[in-house]
Each structure stands twice: as structure tokens, then as C-alpha cells.
Image 1: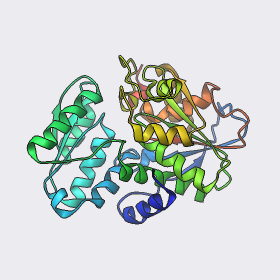
Image 2 (image 1 turned 45 degrees about the vertical axis):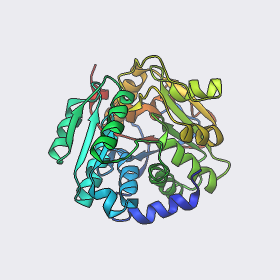
Image 3 (image 1 turned 60 degrees about the horizontal axis):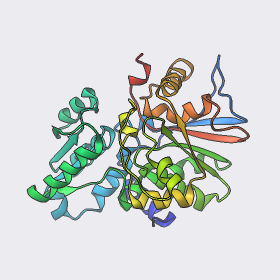
Amino acid sequence: MITLHDIELARRRLAGHVRRTPLIPAAALSRPLPAGGAVTLKLESLQVTGSFKARGATHKALTLSPEAAGRGLVTASGGNHGLGVAYAGRLLGVPVTIYLPANAPASKAERLERWGARVIRFGTVWDEADREARRAAVEDGLTYLHAFADPAVIAGQGTVALEILEDAPDTDLLLVAIGGGGLISGVATAAKALRPSIRVVGIEPTGAPTLSESLRVGAVIELDRITTAANTLAPRRSAELNFEIIRATVDEIVLVSDEEMREAARWLWFEMGIAAELSGAAAVAALLSGRAGDGALRACALVCGAGTDGLMP
């Protein structure tokens, strides 16, 4: 299991490579969030690659030996983790190959190629692309970086919580979007270690309830299908590592629809001037829908990724 010490060590390794992103009050002018108290927004949408994924991918890359990194990095991604790995590859000066499923936006594939990554489209969802990336790692001798089920990746993502609780130590509720579970695994581990009374709520799309269904049955399950447009929150299966951390540290998981995430993305843009992709607006969607935040005195919602797809009809 990952510890607070691991996350603090990750922050020291990441110093100078990723941004300390701002924590701002959610001070809407025309439509305040219907929460029980003050709300802050942690803007990981302003991270170096546009999402928190830069933290975990870069930290993992920095733990590699020169020989392992020099073989080249390979991963599968819905887009944001791939951008994080491409960024890490540029830092280390090593080649990067990213496998993207069909549901990854063309705009992210274009960014990856501009950053020098080799992009290969494979499969319809992340899980299929991931199997191919693992195969390529073995056959081509590349070093594989998992998007969420890796202790070094989770420790890197957990540095988000260190910053939140330094900037707002009285936060009593954290709202965190869940895809595979890497972000919430790290954030919840750090937050509970620093402030045991804090409540951590995860948010999944109704079209990809991977972790909520796994928790319901008490074991990691694979969904038959994915129906959400929030592709970065849409693996069909998580992993044992994330499942066990989430089961031990996360208080609740709530579900939001794609339309609720779109409404939240529009709220972020028109009320706050923040461009969040669909998945990046999931935590705010939980507040706007009334599924989380009631009774919290000081809530923090993570805006975990930048983009404009949430503003599209």
C-alpha cells in the first residue's frame, strides 16, 4: 500500500517538473453551487499537460533506471495519461509510444504527435488499447507505464492532496473524479493520513460505474460495456491495487450522467471562466446535482482536466 511518506517523496522528486496548481474559491456570480458551505476548486486543468496525469506519469518516469527509460516508454491512454507520459519522455529525452482507443479525441492524438510521441490507435476502449501496449512492451523491449495501477503513479497523483490541505487545511470534503482510480487512490491516502476526519467522495459516470460496481460486489469486476462520452473516466476494469486503497479510504462513490457533467462544464466556463473537459467537470457535477456536498462546511472539488468537449451539445 502507498503511504504518506511515499507521496511526500514523490513531491520532492517532482519539484521543478510540475506546477503547484491554484486553489480558488468557487465564487459564482449568478448561480452559486448548492453546497452546504464554502467550496474551493483545485485547478489541475492548469497542470503542465492540462491534467493531473502529468504528476503520476512524470514521477514514475523519474523512478526508472537510465537503462529502463532508455529503452523507450509505452502506455495506453484515453489521452491525458498519454500526454503525461509524452511530457515525461521529453524531460528524459527518451522515445514514447502511446496506444489510444478509438474513443480518444483526435485533438489529444494531435497534441501527442506534436510533442514527439508515436501514436497508435487500437481497440474501442482503454482496456483493449492497454492489452496491446503491454504486448508491445514485451515484444519490442519497451518500458510500460500503467495509467493508474502503479504505486509510483499513485504517489505522484497524491501530491494534489498535499497542496490542497496546505492551502486549505480545514477542508472537510474532497470530491474526486474516478476513472481507473489512480487519482483518488493517491488523494485519499494523503488526505486521510493528514486529516483523518476528512470525507472523500469519488465520482463516476453512470455510463462507466467501474469502481462503484466493484465495491458493491466486493471484488474487481469488468463492465460489459461503456456508454459515457467521458472517455478518460471509462476503463471497463480497475485493478486490485486501486480497489483495495479505495475500499479502505474512500467514503462514498456517487454517479453523474454525461448531461450533468456537460452542465457542470458549462457552469465552470460561464461562471468561473474555466475550460474543463467532460471528465474534468465531474466533481462539480456532483455538487450541482446535489449528490454530494450537503452539510459540508468546506468542500474542495478537483477540476482534473482541461478541454472544451464539455461545452459541446
